Length: 304
Image 1 (cartoon, rainbow, N blue to C red):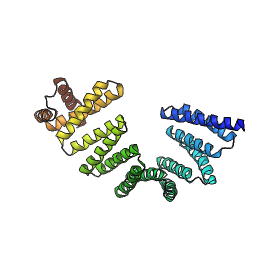
Image 2: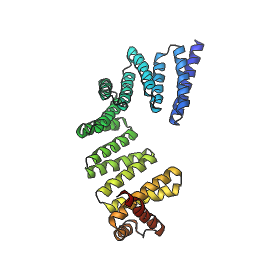
Image 3: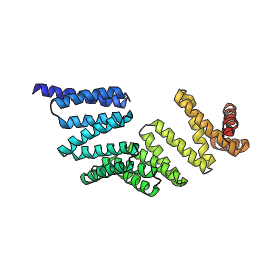
Image 4: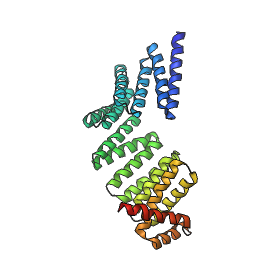
């Protein structure tokens, strides 16, 4: 009995170490820890613990692009969950299998898995799992340009995420709705969704996603020729990226400069300067203006 208790404790520790490594994006370390946890779970016949680690290993292999291995792990987790009558585990694994099938462009199989997951989740009242599946169905419908179905699925996902208080998934769903509506050129509605997504990403302190949403908002405003609203978004982003002064942020600064250069080219120098003065409250600094002008002449003209 003592050996069994020790094995369960080791399994729990290794599983937690796997979760930590996963959050740090150290996939190989996470896989090693989950495999160790699995060994201890199987040694004491803890099938439910083993199923959880099979699912985690499937997720790790999916993230590495090793889809067939991921499927094998998911199928093992599914068998245990179904045999034990674990409806929540079963629904989650069907959801994961649906994601893999969609990535493999096996759309009929993906829909079948999603529908199975959704049926179980809704019957049992698993709102979080149901919301995740609705989100995936929304992605699928969006990929098929079935905008009406995609909107309906995203709205159902949003309602569930709001009910369970998952603010990050709320933010992601608003963002996905923004992308979907923007594809249909319903720009005013897209702006509204992006603004909501931006607020939630900030609350969740995902600054990278908040920046991406802010930039998406700027592009929609620009498409509507709302220059006065788009300009401060771009200027603020450019200033922040330059101040951060790391390689990733500097590449983003180059992208923002491209957007500003495009705006400069469309508006012309005098109108750009006038809007900058009105919105920012000062003249555009000469070094920034020269850089934007250079981008507009060099790169944007090359695209025409």
